[in-house]
Image (tube, rainbow, N blue to C red; front, side, top):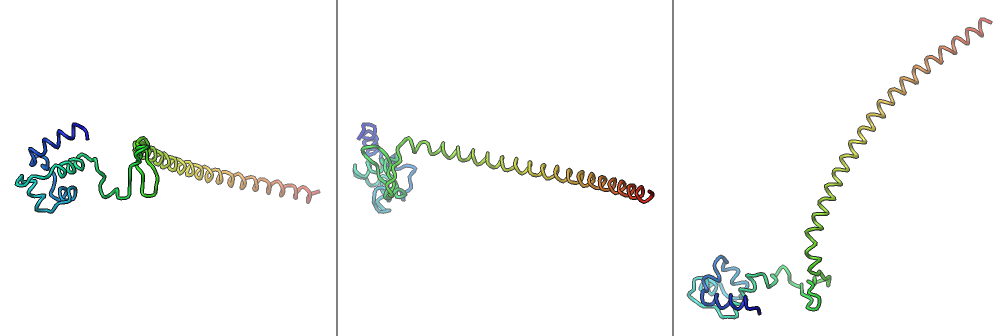
Length: 162
């Protein structure tokens, strides 16, 4: 144990009330494995906890002990990795990159939304242009057909007249 924690434990045993200040009795009970009455007495300073209890509480309070949310998880002493109950290892560097990965995924999702909007706008423009061209083509075809009919009619007259 480092000197830092030894000093905190020594200081805490002399000022027990200060050690538990700001923590609910629930945490003291859960972390140190004591009854509600004992936890309340420690908080009030009417009863002094053992050095072991102070050490255990200090470790929990400084996040040095994993909570029940991590039941089944372990540390690999050789690699320093956090190991899941399924056996997957998470090295410290990999854990630090999780936030970066979430940021990248969020940015990619935003890009995807923007691209979908852009595609929708382009499809709408294409439909509008197709409709406009369709009407132009229809009008062109109608005038072409009308002029052809006039030519055919005039040819028939010429043939008839001859």
